[in-house]
Each structure stands twice: as C-alpha cells, then as structure tokens.
Image (cartoon, rainbow, N blue to C red; front, side, top):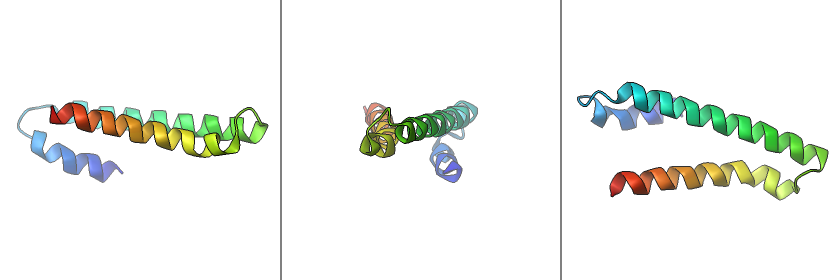
Amino acid sequence: MVFLAIALAQRFRRTGVFATLLLGGIGIGFAFFALDGISFAMGEAGLLPPWFAAWGPKLALAGLVGTLLVSSEA
C-alpha cells in the first residue's frame, strides 16, 4: 500500500509536497489499522454487530479515499 502512495506522489515531485503526502498516507494507514483493531475487539466483545465490526472500517476508508479523490479532481 505504501507503493501506491509513492506512485501517486510522482506527479508531485516538483511541487515539494511529497513529504506531506507521505506523512498523510502513513497517518491515514495508522488510523485505519487502529480503527480496524478497535472495531474487531468491540465485535468480539459483542458491543458491535459482527457485520459492522468487519465492514465498518473498510467502508470508512473507502469513503475517505472517495472524498479525497473527488476533492482533488475539483
């Protein structure tokens, strides 16, 4: 997944925002893994429905990626 961010960053090579893009990608990845682990634990404990514990973080990440994609196109 890190290579996807680096491939995307190649077009920003001359603008100087590569470090910001890389750190943002690492931050989003860390937040995803934390949310995924928390929802997994809450699903095992019975605090969340199993389908939401499994698909909630993935749908949240897909929504964030879609939002960033649409906002960068405008």
